Length: 266
Image (cartoon, rainbow, N blue to C red; front, side, top):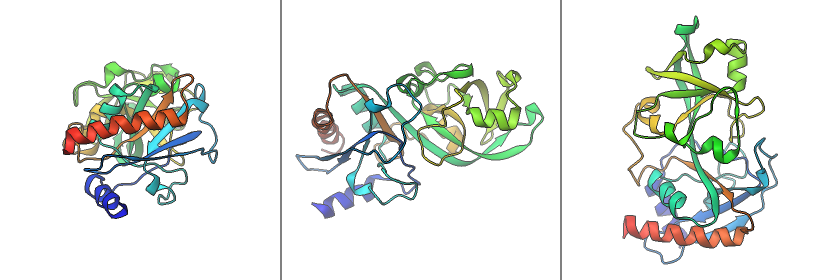
């Protein structure tokens, strides 16, 4: 079984950096192709401080138990998932109020010459459209991203700045709203700034801003990953429904992933 799980992890996971999720509890999942039973474990992870979000005690991260202790961004660590697997779990689960997906991209070329600056290298967080609503994070200026921003690939080049980046680079000027910042050569419109105490869901990331997952091809200069079950690049956080235990969440997510894997891999 261990060899099977290792083969699966190497077959479907991209070899990219895995930041740790800051969450109060971690729901972990190991996937097995052809297996009738997925393996779950539940870890009460009080190793990290609570996120400055609404009811952080309701948050769980979905991941692979084999990933614990194997990442360099701290513990608890989680595993990567493809967008098709995320979509299946988001749409078919019965235990989450909402499920979000995110991925960081480092060393992104950011051209702020339209505001008198020069090219910089920054870290941006690609996030699902429900990211801010599910976390309960608001805007210090303008607005946050919404589900309408995360539509067709490349259709909504919008950017929400982190408060820290807004303060460092633009001295908290509201004039930044509506301006253009080029990320990896593509123009993005600044539509808002995240609330002051929110630095993202990743421990150790110095984020400059947040963009929709649908802008992944532009930010990464890659073809779209969203319909590719073999591209595993997303970290997931769920907000449990009231009264749902971690054991109940494990059972439901286990069932959904079994069905998704059967449909994808046979």
